[in-house]
Amino acid sequence: MTLLCKAASQTLVQCGQRNLGGQIGCTMVLHTWDQTWGAHCHVHCVIAAGALAATGERWIEADSRFLLPVRALSTVFRGKFCEALARAGSTGALPLHEEPPTVGIPEGFAPLRAQLYAKEWVVYAKPPFAGPEHVLASVGRSTHRVAIADHRIPDVRDGWGRFAYRNRRQDNRLQAMTLDADECIRRFLLHV
Image 1: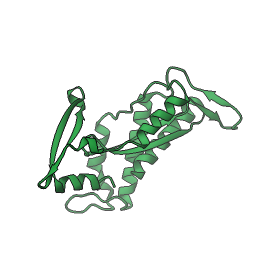
Image 2: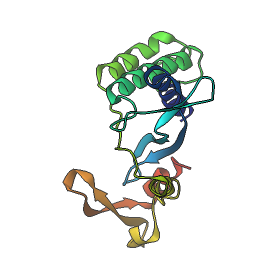
Image 3: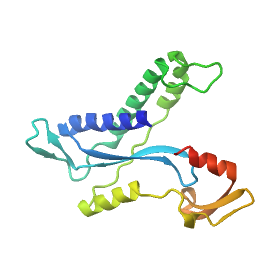
Image 4: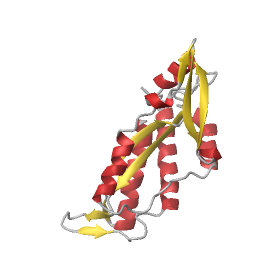
């Protein structure tokens, strides 16, 4: 998670300096799961619509249509993330789960790195907020979201549980998933 957050913040700082000519401000919120408690690590960033000049004496306003180019953000983020991943692998800080163990061997990361670079990464950007009240509402939803509220668990019995989720691939249709108790607990504990 640290690697993800560092790569995201370094990307924003670099693109802010290059595209706006100053230091941007950002609030990042880490999310680790999806609707079905599966691993889906990503960060939500709320960024001020401009940058503070290097002297700290003037505000540089961003273009009203967009803050930073998302294609550039995607490319820079992928590069920073893959570079940090390779560095962590070469120092043994990040073991790979393979046989034989490849901890500390940079060659062990070559296939993973090639796979990561082969895909185009996506950075999604929403239009600017209408004002401070909208920023607070958005950040509040992200930081105080409950992953599995009581109303999403309609049934638990005999060693299994059923919970509701929205299937985004089917027009956000409400569906139910049934898991045995061990799997429910395993998925939940991945995010604790």
